[in-house]
Amino acid sequence: MEETYSLLDCGGGRKLERFGQYVLDRPCSQAVWRPRLGSDVWSRADGYFTREDGNKWTFKKRLPGSWTCSVGHVSFRISPTDFGHVGVFPEHLLVWNWMSKLIRGSGRQLSVLNLFAYTGGASLSLAKDGCQVCHLDASKKMVDWACRNAELNGLTESPIRWIVDDVNKFLNREVRRGRRYDGILLDPPSFGRGTNQELFKIDNNLLELLELCVKVLSPDATFLFLSCHTPGYTPLVLSNVLGQTVGRGEITSGEMAIYGEGITLPCGSYAAVTF
Image 1 (tube, rainbow, N blue to C red):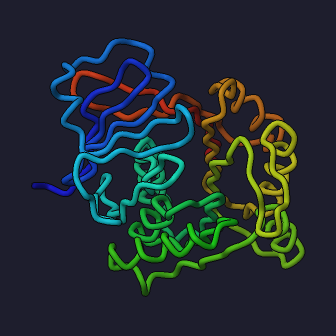
Image 2 (cartoon, rainbow, N blue to C red; image 1 turned 180 degrees about the vertical axis):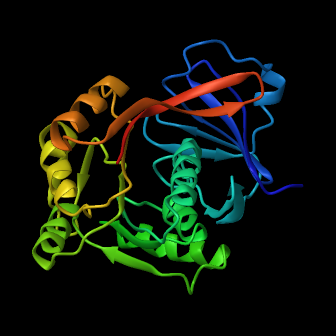
């Protein structure tokens, strides 16, 4: 069986996805329509996650602790977590493809900063495209996971800096050091904690964060890409925020989505500036 990702169906507040050889049934608040496939297909899922009466996985058979699955051109170590995540957000394939086109068109090696970088999908895609990458996340567990994904993709010798730090503290140090980047991407959470429990709330901290990002953009920067899964942060909201904080370049925006056979699942918003 091909070890790739696919969205099989969604609806009724849930999504049915194949991660390589295993099918998982997880909550999805956006999927308010009816499922396309019948209950007989959904009932064959290998794993079912619910947040009712606490977070809980139910498995039809014993699954390995982790396995490998590819999303686009990047391979991932998949592992069901206590929060229902599995180690990749497939909607970010849109971001990787978008960046690849810009990188090919730039005609030079870019230095790119990936903030809130999770398990490294964007970092590894960038490295495959020949970029120098700085990968930052406040969770050592996630950075370690990203390093293992780098091994899966044969990228252990690629120019990737793996950083465990609070994003604001790191950016302030980069400003003082005079380090600059040709591209920045960030996917901030609604709420999070830094390495020393520093509080991040997107409602309170997004503008300051973007202003710091602007300070570490190189004079001949190529892009800044902002994505978000927070309810209410629509493409227009993100466009307005970038227009106010960046103040130059061309802004595009839209919805992130996962595309399946006969169905498209919206998964957050994005806005990007190209220079």
